[in-house]
Image 1 (tube, rainbow, N blue to C red):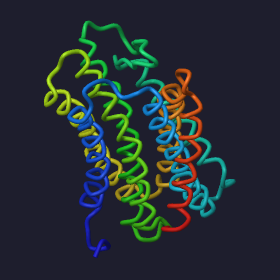
Image 2 (image 1 turned 90 degrees about the vertical axis):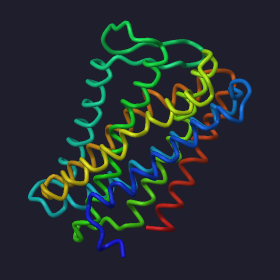
Image 3 (image 1 turned 90 degrees about the horizontal axis):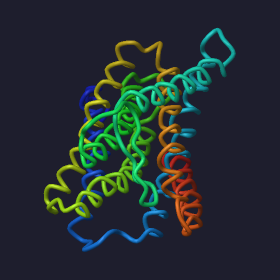
Length: 268
């Protein structure tokens, strides 16, 4: 059945999954009267970081290396170059686009100077980092639609679920601070959920890119891995180990990595 779906439909399926998890995380504003305990957030961020790290290898880098064996170059060149370029690309966006992170209660503004409100900057931070995740989902579903890439539907679905799990705390990271700043529950939820809408859009772009230009697939997979690892190290890991409950973040990372490894090995 899935073989008959177009690359765009498959990308929207994957992007819809990741967007749904963002919305679910944002919905925490309806269940918590105050901020979530720091050790719970540390565990969530650590788990998300572990899941994403494992996904980057098994779902993106490993297929990129395997596909590169068919190219008349050492099979490490394209994966390495794509990985480095993906990381550099997100670094550039971080330097250009204004946004803000809150780590252990400390506000950290990044990007160009702006007079945008703190709420908008928080929203932009999550939206910015959702771009490479959406591209990754679209690229893997696009690779599956090609038919001879070695990427299975289950592999693409597992990656979408992994990114969705990572999006859950990110949705909460937008909505809960807004609630703390006096924004209504519904508006806080709406801001958090909408921050993930860029993922289905980026997924469609990624799917169309690899289906129209199939030769870029190995580079596109490793590019996505590099971009996501940058996000993991720059945002998720600091959040996971920001305070005295850092061991919750560490064990969350280990658990997330193992869960993703098991999913990739057992279901792919």
